[in-house]
Length: 308
Length: 278
Image (cartoon, rainbow over all chains, first blue to last red; front, side, top):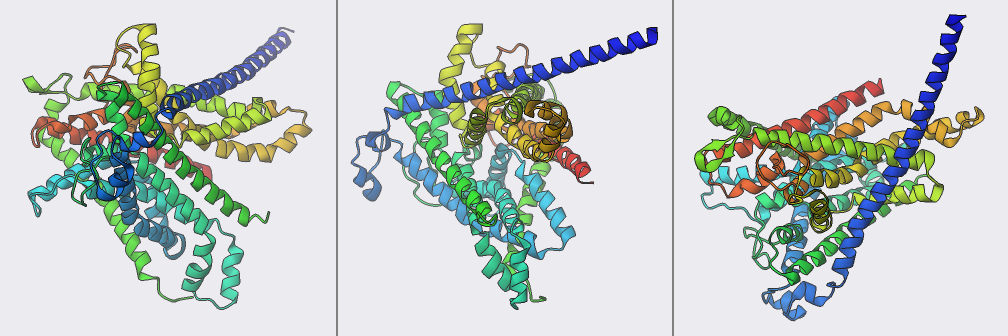
């Protein structure tokens, strides 16, 4: 009798704890949705509200006539144009250094390597994808010091070094997305190619790469977004506040993320602060656009082979 | 089928491997040099370069404190969002939240930091006193920053399990929410843990949030409204120091510790995933 009673009470107790767990999770769900939507919404709204009023030609060029600023390289004192152009050059240089090796390595891993080698290599690359960006910056900094002590006594931090370190930072992501895009293609493509007598390389270059082009392009967009927003790497590798447009590969440069960081810490008056908000809004829209484009590319690729 | 591999593919694979292993070797080598040259001085508690004291222990503690505190909050938020999307939320609001999480991954960290300096810091200052640049502020923003990464990682697993089990569960008379809580969540326990490791790596490696929001005073984390300096912020800030000397070695040791933390989290994640495949 007593046994039965304890059994029943135990069952009741577990049932009530189960019910508590269920409702606790429900409460957590609603609270988190509210916190994330509210917190993030407030931050985005704040940037838009403050930044939107500054969004005009003056934000970019200050008092310099825009055409002159762009073509004659007249100095821009009160605008974010140098930083914007610096970010643009930085991203372009980074892509120049990262694209071919990144995509090439991805294709190699997807198609040509022995499976054991591919596994080792890609786990190594995954390990590198998790390296904090400040550590990549530190690497660039050390590299310059090493160069200075050995073969190039007047080497200094510059836009080329920053782009090199950013390329290291985005390369793993490029490799992974390229490989994943190729491997997600349906096997019938390859079989059809082989049955038509295509060589291994021809299947790869004429069938698989064009078919996966959208996915690869999506990965490239993501990498560009990362290179454009990263601040920690460039902080250690040559970004400065006032340098004007980048003068050459070995010169210092300005960039939007650093301008934003610097404004938060050192702004002198209201107009500088507003310019910071404008720069934030511009950077936000830039990376949102890149991310959106990446998403469209990758979704387009999924659709194409699902048959709808 | 036996034609040769295109040379440029093998070359680029070799190039990428060589470059990336160089990074590892360089950082490890420099950290080892730093440890060897001034290990005992570095692993002490006071950072006062003027009086030749270069202790980085407070920064190690700050890094761990900040990563764990924001990991706990961020993980709960991510779990909550997951519950909302797959269980309790309405259809429209759930897909809106899911879209918001994806948009959040596109927000530059420095923009997050910038907005928080002018929005959250005054709020904290008014509510709790102090300067507003504190452990609490950095934790709140950092947890919001790592939430989408973890939520998206969790969602991949949960969506698949939910698709597999929803029909059976419905036949047993379970509602969508009940199916989620009693079937899907326990089944994706491993992924929930994996997401936490992912989040830890991001939280420990982030530079801009602690630099902009945590105040950067070198001291042990005491109370949530006090400021401190993390290892990442230390590397970002201390560059003006002269080349050579103990302050300089501290950068390398900090870099080495960060590398070890992120690589450790990554290896753990891999072993977790390896169990799942068997």
